[in-house]
Structure formats: structure tokens, C-alpha cells
Image 1 (cartoon, rainbow, N blue to C red):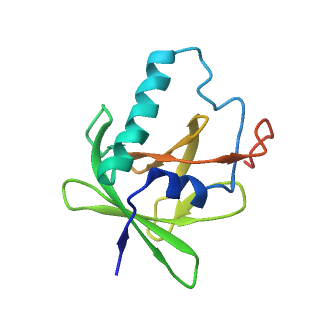
Image 2: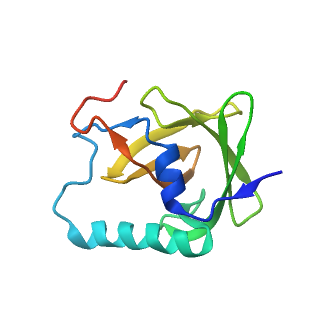
Length: 141
């Protein structure tokens, strides 16, 4: 049984294993963009939705939901898309944050802000709150 994550802060603590790569961080001086990301994380805390851009959508919007379950492999995050599809992610503690839990397509994780990562699988993109450890250290390739 999946348990709905009701707080973006919970996910941030779960993803505390991420390492920051200064070349990937959003520190581009675009405060409007940074404010939009902060607002999206705050809004997700209110209704359990996260910002995503499912395949075929160029723009991000708060339309996906996130569930979690502890398994023998570790913590599994399941992102539910509005079309009924979903992606399963395994939280890892080796600096990558998350990896695809199943399927043939690998998850690509990019740091987009101080407290947010973008996970891309196939044409789907998801923004997840994250707490970065070792800020300024190079992330593994």
C-alpha cells in the first residue's frame, strides 16, 4: 500500500544523499525562476502534488502526485502522471539521489536549484525537492 507524501520537506530529507555539482545548480541570477521553483515546492506541500512535465508537455505544472513505500531494496517513490501512467524511482545514498526502480530507461538527475532536482525518464520530467549534501563537491558521473 502506498502512503501519500504530504510534505515536500519529507522528500527533501529522503533525498539528502544528493551531492551538488556547481556546474548544474540554478545559480544563474534568474530570481523569477528561483521564486517559481520555491512556490512550486510550497504548493506541493499543501496538496501532495509535484511539478512535472509528462512526455509531450513542454511546460512544467503541478499535476503529478507522489507516493512512497519502503521495500527490501530501499525507499521506492512512485510518481503518478495525470494520464494514469507512473514512474518508479529508488532512492539511493551514493550521491545520485534517485535511479529508475524498474524498466529499460535510466533516470537522469539534474540539480536545478539549491533544494530541487529534476528527474528525466524517457520524455517525462519531474521536479523533486531535495537537500544537497557536500555543496560544492563534484557529483559522480
